[in-house]
Length: 168
Ligand SMILES: [Mg+2]
Image (tube, rainbow, N blue to C red; front, side, top):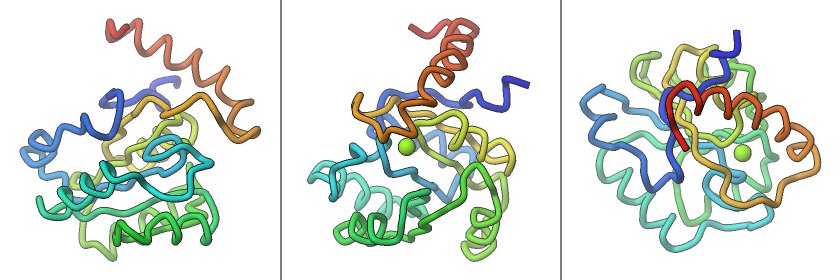
């Protein structure tokens, strides 16, 4: 079932997130991958534009959570200027920590979305939990070695998806 890896929404970057659509669909909780979704994996802190964007998200009433498979140190340092909820070592595509967080935030599967750059972790995780899967193109070509290995297979999935949806 290749569809389990397909995005529901495909965007170029987090700044294209369809916030009005989210509101109309009552999507309240946004679970963000960090590495290559919000920032390059080897950049320790979000830039100004990103900090302001997250401020905006909070102001708009969204529950914002960093949802990363990376370690506590990476995630907490990254969050210094964001001040949002965090989940490190998220275990994606596992959904245990996601479900716990959704209970904590008081949202159900109709009110949550995952935003991420990997189909086998982020998109698959979203579909397993039954929540909205938002794909962002990876910020940069640099990747952790383990991610690099997966990209070939990722691209096959994405190319099939794009062909189906007529995305260039
Ligand atoms: Mg990522």
